[in-house]
Amino acid sequence: MPKLTKRTVDAIEPQATEFFIWDESIPGFGLRVMPSGRKSFVVQYRAGRRPRRMSLGPSTVLTCDQARTRAITIIAAVKNGEDPAADRAAKRNAATVSDLAERFDKEHIAVRLKASTAKEYRGNLRRFILPALGRLAVPEITRADVAKFHHDLRHIPYQANRCLEVVSKMFVLAEMWGLRPDGSNPRKHIRKYPEDRKYPEEKRERFLSTAELRRIGEVLREMESERVELPSAVLAARLLILTGCRLGEIMTLKWDYIDFHERALRLPDSKTGKKIVHLGAPAVEYLHDAQRIDGNPWVILGTLPGKSLSDLQPFWQRVRARAGVKDVRIHDLRHTFASTAVASGQGLPMIGKLLGHTQVQTTARYAHLAADPVKSAADAVATSLREALG
Image 1 (cartoon, rainbow, N blue to C red):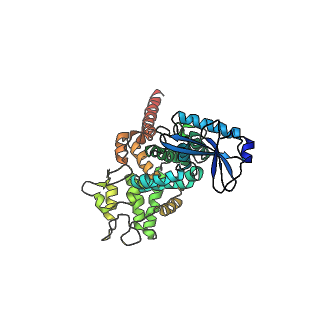
Image 2 (image 1 turned 180 degrees about the horizontal axis):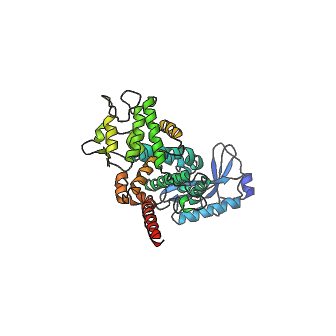
Image 3 (image 1 turned 60 degrees about the vertical axis):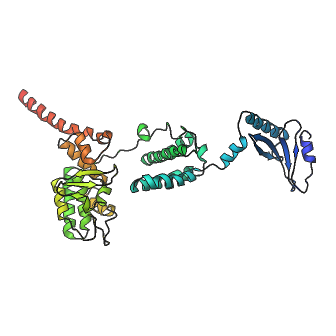
């Protein structure tokens, strides 16, 4: 067992089978010689009762002193109760973010999320997260990696923040599944863009004016009389305006969900779970007059027998173009319902019930609108007093 030096390593000749030459000064440090003549440094030790052997590198790359230093470091770690070979194998076999995303889809997205949310999660994974992070090992992802990923999407701040939410949830589950240590979520302390003045996330609060609503009403009546568009599409637009419901709640509405006696929609499922939507008289009238087809349970009928209308967006784009309100999204009809309720003097708790909000802060975004009627009253009183003052 000679001390391994460059001279002894170069002098060793290969044999018919592999063999080892062990260093006399460092127990467990040696040289593996293959029949092909390839030589590599190794270190051998025991972790508990298990023998371990680690390759340190080929002799053509490492000098004897470099390999000896590495061996000493590994042996010292073993004496501290570590198992460097197992750690290396764990890192080599560690799941990548792509692997994690696949499990995340099967065990969380497909099981716990609603269809619309699941579609958004999968889209963010496919378009943004996996191209940037997919090849990296889950244990090696750092906060710097996630911060850079978020920063690289700063030109689309809304999308950047949604992706950050997906990454956060994915790594919460990675901890639960034992793929990362507890409390190591790399999304922690990374601020969303609303908190950053340079790249704010735009919050849309588009409300239709009375004139715009009147024009949309005219367009819907014109389309109805022209009989080119589906009557169910016209009905869907009117119900969205008159109920403040989300698009999915109207498009998946069944006749069984409608309680005409109580003037309510009893939705078995929605974004916030099971809920009741109380209807105003105009909405009830449109539902009474709507076409029903035997064997078709859907209120918003499609073109295929027994099916509902699957997509309202093309129809709505034609409506808004014809009405001259091309920037109005379907969801803005819900905002308009809320703003009209505020203007009529309804309190935020009541508006929250009308919209089916489960959290107060969701309704609170309309709080500033409540000041408008007060300002109008202040103007009227102040004007009267000024006239009295002459």
